[in-house]
Image (cartoon, rainbow, N blue to C red; front, side):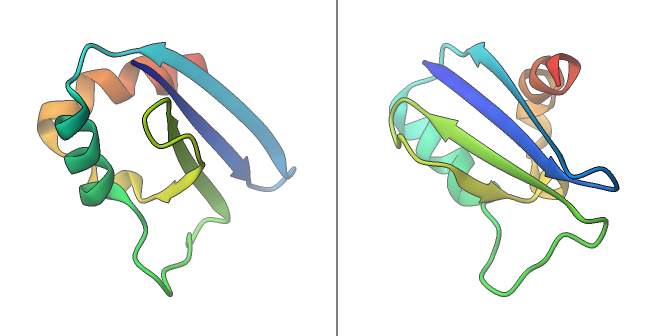
Length: 83
């Protein structure tokens, strides 16, 4: 499944996007999104925001990178390396 990670904001206000193909079942993707999506009222303290988009959900979902489960670190490292 195609996953994209978008980083916006920061000092220069840049937007960067990275994509990767992950072999995860739809249920795992939904569980991951539930675990890392930003809770309402949360703000990025450093002015940088991250959004995850999947073929399954087809919309940009604001996420908290500090909530990435350890099992998915390697997958997210692939995306961060491409930003």
